[in-house]
Length: 125
Image (cartoon, rainbow, N blue to C red):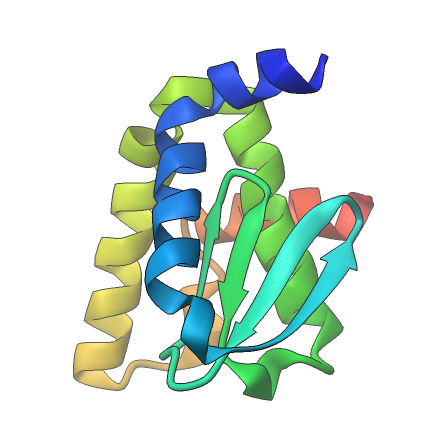
């Protein structure tokens, strides 16, 4: 079953492995969060979820909201498969870039798509 899930999520799984190879020397800690693998990476700006691999800035280590939010993206990846990067990944990166660039209210960031869906999915589990 796990092999089918890898194939279903192959584009983001491959990117998750690539991130691991590139960032491995900066990984400070690794934890399991509800079946996902969370890497706390020195110097990483925020967070990204690629299949079951979640990469976060260490400042989020004790933040259950952010952990659950990124886990929600993992669930989106399981639901959408190959469409995840197009339907969730790209809109999320664009949204995050706009929020960071213009210093917009972080509370409003989670109020729109696809972040609000990730919040709902992550908090249910």
